[in-house]
Image 1 (spheres, helix red, strand yellow):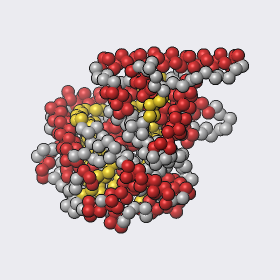
Image 2: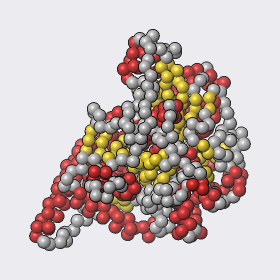
Image 3: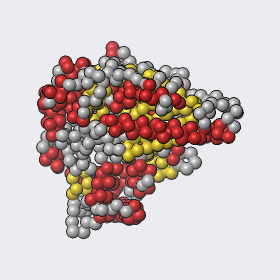
Image 4: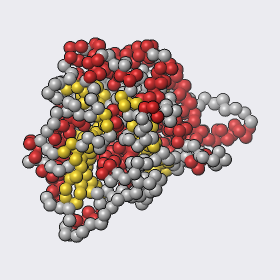
Length: 596
């Protein structure tokens, strides 16, 4: 029997990955390998919302290449051709592994899905060729000229106009989005701007090259369009108020001509160059690109509002999927979903949106302090993390006991609770303050400060910013229908993913203690971004209901690690949160551009 396979390609800011998935459970994959003549069962998951169903996907092969794709600070996309070449190498490696394991006649690739770090846009000439690094923009921009442009935009618009735009696009005015970066490029670099015929994401460049088409004229998926900050996430049209703020008609004309759902403009067939290289992809459908954050949620089994996906890789984010079908403009009220200040809301597909927040520095902040302290030896760093865990437990217990003692004595706690504090804005701030020109801060250093203290403070700093995001998400999703119902029964769970949390037990417990929410590491979701691509592609192939486009997969199965919040930890984390918030407020005027 022939096994149907989905290929998932993920271009991240620091690596490129490719995974192959069978649309069948592991036992059937094993049967195909040993008995190719056996007849398979048919598998279709139910699309009814809240009905849990295991998705029949099995990882068959994977390949990855480490590659820095984004220049820190400027956000410029580095070496586009090298990124595409790395993706091609990973695909070739995966196809070779499949060939070796199953033979040329025992599998067929039916679809290729793609995700990338979002936002990214590459300036192309009339022939569809990238112009160069200077004609690229991405989410990671924090340059002085873009910061100044953000502040200029805020002065041009009233608070009401800013809020209206925020509620339509789901994004604040910030340097991580396309509008201020495009304004700077077209206004301050006109000679470069004149060369740009069209802007396209990396995903479309790859798909066009592999299928033998020009990327110019390709549509942009709702998902990637939403990450630019130019899409009305409610009706899925480019927002007129946002387009009006772009610098010129030439800039507006250079945007991709249409937007559509990820499966509404499928490419197929291979360019002549790739027909001999990848014959297994000759009949595959190439889906439009997706935002890495969206598929990370789906791959982490967080496709419903009571599960918050918390991911720490190079960056960090906390997000939740919320059902919100597209409505025509005249039927899309702006109060259908109020985006809390400090969060974003991106369209995933025609059925759901992604509500949450992101930090540009997550795992990268820990890598920074690790390199600064020369903790390069893995065993030495692991021992440091264990000491941090012990220190945290002691600090949490002390804070709790001090509170109990003060309560029993009737006195207020006037002790100096100041401890080392980190604001991890090494590459600027996104959620929740979106302050222009923000930088990192380390406060509370003394002669007694140790390397362990610095690592602990850095971990706490990132955890607290994620906690601020999760607190805002909870306000939206924790709404029991019966006002007499205990709200605690409706509190969501956190599902963690990303290398930063997969390898660090102490950090997982910190997330639980900081948020007060049960936190899980479901090992079946490892490689969550590629897995999410495959789940979404499978859902589109088997789509049968307009009520929910993604399966609701069970969590907490065998091998899942669970971290309930420790009962005596809340006092310590409340003190830390108050201290960090006060520190951010105090230093904000020093950021140059001021508070957002």
